[in-house]
Image (cartoon, rainbow, N blue to C red; front, top):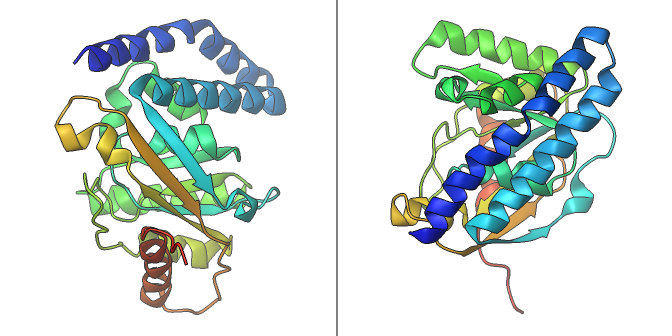
Length: 241
């Protein structure tokens, strides 16, 4: 209980601490100083994410960092276990990236402003027209060389169970031709969702698979099944033999 309260207070105090920097980032955008702006955004986001995970009691074990291309945009396809998935990806995969995120996050003060500066795309899953518009926005970002994270399950599993994948993200990959990097997260739900709203220390495995290049004219359902299988295999405990 104490850990949860301290982490909650830390979350909001840290965001308040970043307000001057957020104003500076907005000024840099206005002046067109994009390289400096992006360096500040992703440096601050990474520091925030790593410190939050430490406060929560998370231990990160990551494999496959060498599978993340250093140049050019990629589409990270990731399973979705819990609220800490985003901090893990921000803090421990160094490549700058935006997120396809649920629209409810737009009402979170300060955090939503940082997400907008990161070019995150907010989506209302229950509104088909807005979902299509969001995916079109994602396609533009990828074509502008910004990497993107998509959780194709659409919602948190709150467990180790892997849900069904929606095909929208894979249509996006086929449309833009960017490499898909499958990422398997295992254990983020143990930090929070497993106990309701109480934090508990947990070990989180992050397994990054080699990139998959989408082949033009592939059936999106076939590509969806292929990437889901890769993530499902990486969610299994590695063999000791």
